Every structure is written in C-alpha cells, then in structure tokens.
Image 1: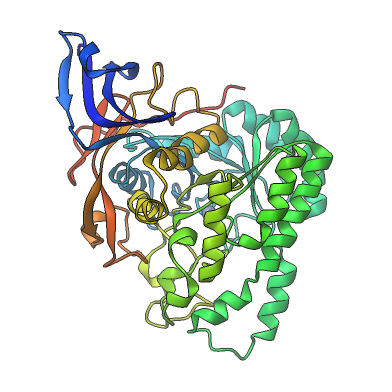
Image 2: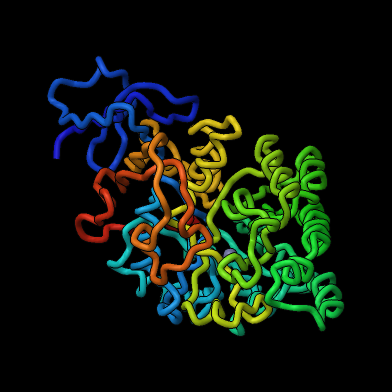
Length: 451
Ligand SMILES: [Zn+2]
C-alpha cells in the first residue's frame, strides 16, 4: 500500500489541537503536515471536524487469560479496547492462572495471546512473597515492569508482599530499571475498620466505603515513598482513589523521587453519594469515594501530581458480582471499562475546561512512558506507530450493552448519557474498529522491554 493521508481539522498532537494531515507509510507515521503539503500521490481520507487522537495506551488491564478466560480473555478484552480507542494494553500479572510470576508463566500467556489480539499488548510481571529471585529473568524475558499488592488481592495464586519481602526484591527491581507498580492499601486500617463493621448491613455502599478508609491508602503510599527514597527504584502508584494522599505525593515529586501516579475514570466520574445500595457493579478497590474527594483528584490531575488515567479494567462472570444478593462484602471488586473510559473521561474533562490534548497526555503519552513504549506509542508524530482514534468529541450517546464488547456486559455506566464517540480506531495503519465492527484479522502483537 502506498502513502496515505488522514486529514482532520482537529489533529491532537503533543503541543495542541490543529488542522493537518497524518501521512502514513505502512505501519508508521511518516510525518504530520499541513493540508496543502499532502503529496499529490497520497491516498486521502478526510475526517473533517472529527478529531484524530493518538491511539490510547492502557497500562492497567486484567485480561485474565490463560486460566480465567471465562472472566475475560485476550479476544474479548482487546476487542473492547479497540472499540474504546486503545491500541496498546499492558496486562496485569494476576487473575490469570498461572499468575505471571515466572518466565514460564509469561510464556504461557504469550501462547494464549497468539493470533487473538486486536491491539498491541505487553505484560507486567508479578512480585509476590516468594519469587524475587525470578525478577532478573522476567526482565530479560521482556516484562515491562512489576506489580505487587500490599493487601491481599482476592485470588489465591497471587500473594501480597510485606515490607520485608519488598526489601529483598527492591534492589533487584532497581537494577532492572523497570517500574514497580503498587496496589497501595495496607491491611491494618482495612482490618480494623472491617472489625468495627461486623454487624453492619453489607448491602449498603456506605458500609463497603467505610471498610476501606483513606488511611489504608495513605499509610501504604507513605511506606512506598520511604522505600523509594532508600532503594531508588521507579515507583508507580496504581489507581489512586484518595485525594488525601496528593500532598504527600506532591512533596515526594518535589523532592525528586521517581514516583508516578495513576487514577481511573471511575474515581474521576462516580461519587459515593450517588451509588445506590446493592449496586455491586460499582464495587472496586480502593472504593469510589465521595464528591469532595473526586474534586480533589481532579485538582491532582490539573496540577500534574496524577500523571495518567488508566482503566483498571477488571471484569468477572456476572454471578461473582452477587447482584441478586446485593452484597458488597462477597461481590468481586472490579470495574470493566475499556470501551467506555475515553467518553467517561471526555464527558468530565470538557466540563472542567480541559482539552483533547490533556486527554491524550493522560491516556496515551504518560501510560506509554510508564510501559517503556513511548518511542513507538502514545503520540501522533513522525516515526511513531500509525495508531490513532477517529473521535467525534461533539457527539453524544447512551451506554448500552452492545457498545461494551468485553465478555460480560456489566457496567456501572449502563444507561448513562456520555459525550464523545469513538468512530474508528487504527492499529499500525490498519483499521481495528469501525462503527461497531472489527474489520480484518486480529493483528495485535506483543511489545517487549529491551533488556
Ligand atoms: Zn487492577
């Protein structure tokens, strides 16, 4: 195929939204030029006022394959991702069986992913309480970084780590130069709160919220910053849900610690006051907190303390959500939002005066940096992969099951009116999604860290 030109009056480039044309040669962007500079022999496609954003990068997804493919899987997760404007996912090392805590487990994942992915992908390796000696080998085998839990994650194949485990692992992780992603909640404050709630009504959202206090996040982040100072590894705080830790994180950044922070669309859009009792599709950990907290998180994004927004897409079979029992204690925690994350964020962001450039920074460029693929992904610029989303920021739609595309159509956003429609998605120059369809064969491939 020859040179192609994708024209739009709203190309979302790193330094602003402007009219122009993306010139695509095979799988890569050759250049971004003004309309009058498009070579005469290029095949043109003009999107007019519809925006072209860089393909989104989601560094926090639970694909659950191999082993729990009935929960999700590469085929369904990457289909939902393409429909949501993503071109690259990084898979979390847990909920799949085996958990990605050894090189052989990583190899099993690669076999499972083969030929089924509609977006590119990479793998985080797991750090558990007995595998720190596997860290160098996993890094050489191409994981993009490591993930650990400071609280029990809810599946038996993946253990939490304590400070002593971390002290054994951190010198090895620092040596790899790869980031350590941390689920930052400590069990102490959660256990204490849960004991006080032993007679509480667990169909009430407020009971669940009280059981996972802000203090659990603050104490965990404080411990991790302390260890970051000591060992000098790249620390990444996943799914920050409490606004009360922003000051501490801001100070750590000013001190020069190599710490980055993500939050998720559900923490930036939902608020505890609006969650009705028994609505277990809203359960995730840490929990969605109150209105004022949500506004604090937005201030964190505005100030740059929160670097990025990722989905934490974490589905499960419907029965595990305990929707009949309406029980927040036994329901699986996790919100699946790959296909809705962009419109949810755009709906909130535009009301607050943010632009599509901000969206691209939070949802493409920064996650690509975290995952080590920012020289290929996350930008519309010469030399980058020809990954982009055709996005109509002015259109609205209502969330219905046929727009979700992940395996089990459960969503806390069901029935909501949202702004911004993903019309098409291009992965390395070829259509991966178009108006509800997934044209062509799955072409996604793994991105590996360069050891
Ligand atoms: Zn997660």
